[in-house]
Image 1 (spheres, rainbow, N blue to C red):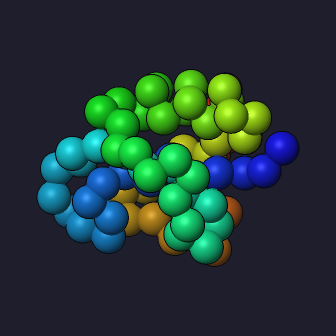
Image 2: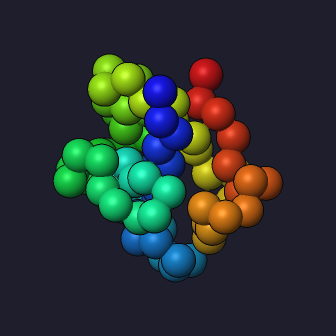
Length: 72
C-alpha cells in the first residue's frame, strides 16, 4: 500500500482552499481529479488501496514528515 498525499489546492498559496488533489511523493497525480472535500479524497485513496496522508500545515512539502499525518 503506497502513501499518497491529500494536497490542498491551490498549492503553495495562502489563498483559500478550493479543493484537494491526490498525489504521489514526486507530485504525480493519482487520479487526475480535484475533490471538493478532504474526506472525498481520503475515501477515494483508501478505495484505491493507498494510505492517505493529510496536511498539518497549509504550505506543504512532501519531504518534511512533520507536514503530514496519517488519515484515520
